[in-house]
Amino acid sequence: MAQVDFSNAVLDVYNNMVMTYDQYLQFDKNATLYSVNNVQITSGQTKTIITNTPSKVSILFTGAFTASGTEFYFTPSKFWRVSNISFSANDTYSFVIDIETSGNT
Image (cartoon, rainbow, N blue to C red; front, top):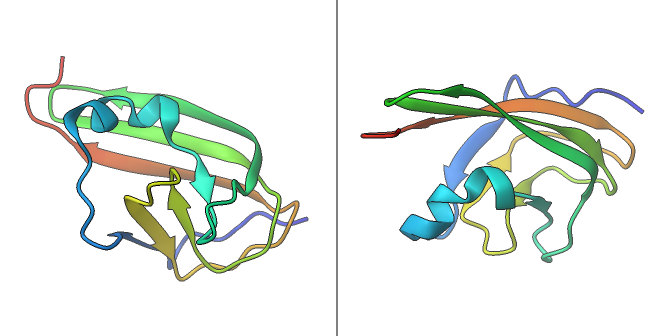
């Protein structure tokens, strides 16, 4: 078991998919990590909003992987992909996603 290193991770949009307004607003509640085969690959995942201002929302994700891989996707719809990492089953993770917002209240 090791802590996954995200220092070289790449976060990008997958297949140019766009979130609907409702999916975007529910991201902090519904975002779960999945493999390319739509299999959930985490256990004990928690999401904590650490910043919530009119211009930015920051979400802290923590948990452990249940599989090995080099990339993962958020939600089975695969809106966003995180790649350029390496993890094994039982490795722990902790990372922050910063989302720029406009008119957030």
